[in-house]
Image (cartoon, rainbow, N blue to C red; front, side, top):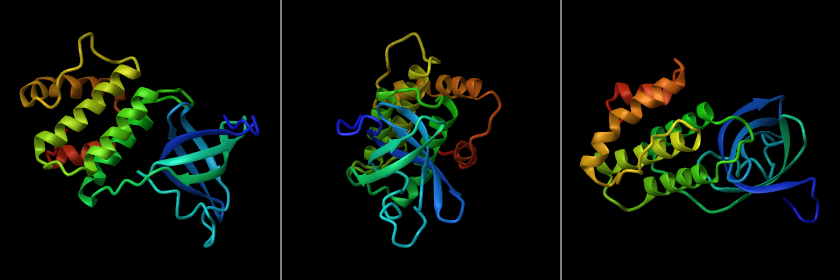
Length: 201
């Protein structure tokens, strides 16, 4: 919360999704560390010289300030809170994480552990580690594991070592089945694409 104005809340976060609203504004779905998923209106964000326009990008860590008590808050300010240069061929994996969050998390339900896991996954997509299938799979499986645990659908066992190829392969189907169960028939388009391409899902 902003100490100078208690009506304004402040947190780090990521934009998961955005849609146009009226001629010059956006409705953005934000995943913040302390407040969870929040819908906000970014007024004037589509104007050519808006300070918000170059900042409100997906997979970019932001410092956000907003106000409002209704279901849709009003974005007051957004600033870069770091830089993540996500390789183009990893966008589909990042979109998959976004779709999972939007599907499993209720609005304004705080999940700092899941937020940290999301941030960690994006950073690992960008690091200099050899991007083989085992490494990518370990990133996805760990995020899925944390997501299920944090939303009450987890497993009664210790977290596996996802960097271990054998352990990762053993829990793959178990995690996949659990996610399918709690999607209740909803389709995640990124998940479908990855399945069709046989890419670690």
